[in-house]
Length: 155
Image: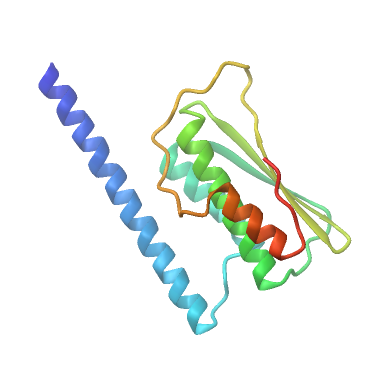
């Protein structure tokens, strides 16, 4: 029985390692595309990000867009995307297997706001989950990035 537990943990580590490698490769491809001047990730890719994260982690996540979507600068678009990515990663990592998260992207005139809410049905403290590797942005880095663009981040 103990040997089976070791094998199960080893398989889980290998699976996480494969996921981290895939994410790293995807980040590298996006970085190369950015250096070449190709499109950067932005609000238009949030739905795909939510789906991919849910599939990779089992996190129950949804995206709701309100208002009339409009183009934002590449820097703002990338900041929105990276903020959503970090929020989903943190939720998957710390909120546990029963976590549910709602991302709300709201357009109001020339303003855009991204809100991320834990929508667990109970008030029980979450159990840590396996999650994803972090891209290293962290809340402080995301806050600084938002402030450089005239925005704000609160957690």
